[in-house]
Image (cartoon, rainbow, N blue to C red; front, side, top):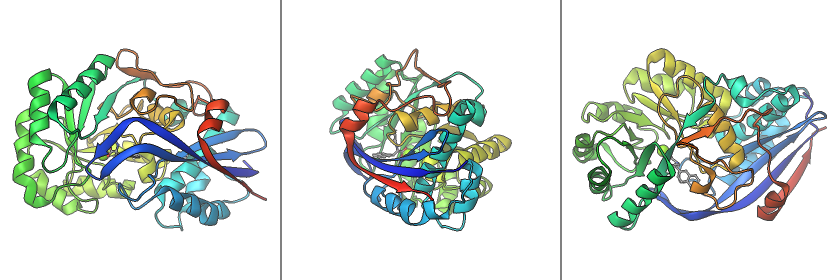
Length: 367
Ligand code: NPQ
Ligand code: MG
């Protein structure tokens, strides 16, 4: 495939409510969209980097810079999605930026071939069960109201964001109010250290599916030690940036579950590799979320339909985050989202909405 040019488009998406995690409170999403244009088709990639480097070292201005300055110039004249990964290999890190470029190329390639993301990746079902991530709240009653609203919408699994001072009490309150049957898990976004093991062990009483990323991003060894001190399964998110990290974490005993976010690990091809590796080792995976618009969400839902995704993901409906999505909204039906079946991502940006939320565009011709 010959790429004739790439558009970098920034959009500003207000959130329906502030989303608080252990690393900060977000009120709007500043998203970088990559549109790859070829003679036969075009494709979209959504960069999941946040505006500030709080979740990982990447941030959206840096991603745009590395794409225009290093990634696009490194692409060969003729390229497909596998070729993107190979061509970008010498450039270290910047996985969210690389994922956006590779996804846009893959989307263009699949649209030209008339094949959906789900079919290309190996989806084993036509819909996926959905969980929702619930932010840290100012009070327990406020949290219980939020959880009740999501359960009423049909979400089959609740994830509570936790941090020191907001962990055992919210989990206890949710269990007391909604019972022991509901699927419940927590996500610390790296807010604890190994000395907090006794506090984290108190969560063992609540039958949680998992505790996600309790310790720092590069604390693989400490996670392995923590796994011996708590009974709740440990799931890694921020720590896993590649299939090699996943292999290391599994052999160290640092986790028994992995949250796969294609942006964090460099794209959907690497996501499938981690899926295959985990499946071979009996390690459960689920699809994480980075407050994607409908474009990123479409690809995540396709990925979540692979056979090794045995736990519900953070593949929420559009309205969990956005009043108006840039694509036709993803809506839950019986707690599930349908895997798009059209070519490529199977969804398109709605031109008028896209125009309205766009804050800048940049066209980069490729000779
Ligand atoms: C997680 N996501 O699993 C992330 C963290 C996260 C759905 O819990 C703006 C952009 C705000 C990306 C807040 C969920 C964000 C963000 C949280 C990602 O750890
Ligand atoms: Mg997480």
